[in-house]
Length: 347
Image 1: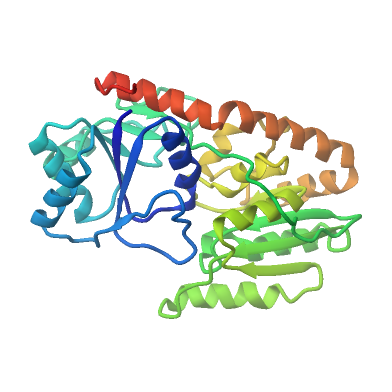
Image 2: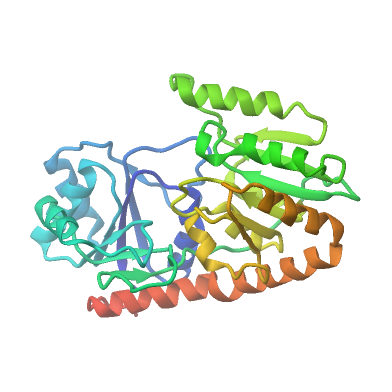
C-alpha cells in the first residue's frame, strides 16, 4: 500500500473513479485543493481545502501529517509550489499532473520555468495527443471511467435520438448555441431530443452569465431539456438514457463527459479540439468532428438518426473501449508502473 497525495485546484468529478480505484487497490489517498465546489462527491475522500496561497508553515504541516510516499501536483497556484517545496525537503518523489498532450514536448524554457518554481519535470497526462514524437518527460495515464448503478433512468423520448451534452453553461467555448444551430440546420429537430446539463455561471461573471442566459433562452425550444446541478452519481441515470453524448467544444484540454457516457454504451461525439478525442477511432467507437465545419456534426447526427443499428454498433464498441482502455484496472496498472519507476512500493 502506498500513501498518495494529489494537489489539485479542486476535486473534479474526473478524479472520483480514479480515487475509488486507488482505494480499492489498498492505497491511502489524500487530496489538497484550492477550493471545494457545490456538487462535488466527497463520499470517498474529503479534500483538504487550503486556498490558493496557504502559508508555507501550514503546507509543511499538512504534508507532514499526510505522510505521502509520493506526490502528484497539478497547477494549483501557490499551493502547488509550496507542497513541492515541502516534498523536496522530505526527499519525496513527485510528479506533475497536467492535461497537455503526450506529444507536446516540454521545451527548454518550460524546463527552466519548472526548475525556477521548484516543480518536478516528469508529468503524467490523460491526453494522448496525435501522431508525432512523445515528450520524454511525459507518461500517458488515462483517467478511468466506470458504469455506476442506476436506480431510475432519466426520461427518454422514444422514437428519437436521445442526445446528451454535459458542459458548463457559462463557458462560451463549450459551443451549446452552435450545437443547437447545427441540429436545426440539419433538419433534425423532429428526430432527436437534446438534453443539456451543466453548472450555471457565477452571477459575478458577466460574460459567463451572458452566455448562460443565451443557452437558457435557446433551451426553451420543445426538443431541448435543460438541467443544471446534477450530482455526480446521479449523472449515471442520464448517461444510461442517452443514445449519444456530444461535446462540441473549442480549446478543450480533455473532455470527460463523453468518456463517462461510453461506459454506458452512449456513442461519444467529440470535437477534434477535445484532448480525449485522441482516445477514439473515428467511425469505429465514436466520432470526431471539426466544429469549425459544423456540417460534419450535422452529418454524424443524421447518420445516427437514420440508422439505429449504427447507434447500437458504435455504442457497443465505445463501451468495449471504455472497459478495456479506460478501466480502473488499466489505470491502476499504469499508476503502479509509475510508482515502481520512482521506487515506491505498492504492496
